[in-house]
Structure formats: C-alpha cells, structure tokens
Image (cartoon, rainbow, N blue to C red):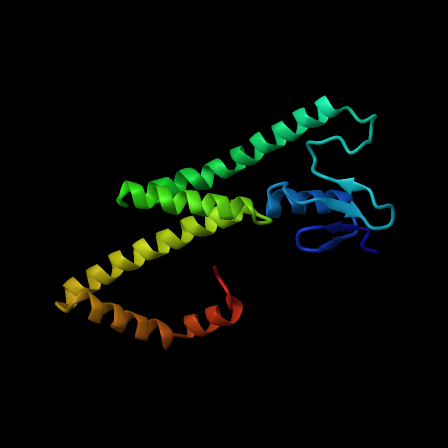
Length: 170
C-alpha cells in the first residue's frame, strides 16, 4: 500500500524512508513528501517534522536557512555552467545565466534545470568540435560535415532506440 506521495512528481511509496530518499536524490530535497492517510508532511530528512508552537522569528530563520540551502544546491551546476560559457561575451553570459537562474528558481526543480543547461551547452560544444575534426579530415566545409554526421546519426540503430526513450530532452 502506497502511503507516502511526492508532491512534485506524484510518485507513491510504501515506506517513508524510500520517499525521503527519492526526494533527496531526485528533487534535491526541494519536494514535500506527505502521508496520504494522515496528511502529515515530511519536508526532508534535515528538518524536524514535528509541529510546535508557532514562533514567527523561528519560522523566518528556518525560511532564511532554506533559501541559503537552495542556493548552495545550485552552486555545483552553476559553477559548471560558468566554466562552459568561458568563451562567451560577458554581457551575453550575464543575460543568459541570470535569465536561466530566474526561470529555474520558478520551476519545481531548479537544480535540474541548471544541470540540463550545462549538459546542453556541453553537447553543443562537443558537436562543434566533432564536426570540425571530421570537416578537416574530409577536407569539406563544416556545414557539409555537420549535415553528413547528422545523416549518419539519423540512420543509426542507436538513434532510433534513443529517440524512443527520449521523446523530450530539454
């Protein structure tokens, strides 16, 4: 019987421990796990799940700590993204990163949004490098090498299998 539910993805768990582990590993402890039978929320393994008398100063302190914790979780993918954009014009980098951060923070999983941006930027850079090598080897323009490689990928069994399991990537 699935008593515990993740509020981000609605995945159900029969054990609280599994639900909290899912929250930590998948949602970076930004989701809320709740018991559907009792209605009790389990925010994450770091927080106390017991209710006490309401203290606005304590609540503000907890809120501030949670905000700092979220920023901390964003740092690893943020630093990776900065490294990926080292060759980008500073004003373009500022616009891109700030727009991405604002959008990510409005999402249900900001860490994943930023990590997806890192992965996408790496993929684009990798594609450019690979195309450049093939173009030089074949002594053809980069555009022609890119078209050639795209055609090879599209006709491969790997691409067909990949496309079946990855309908939407970003």
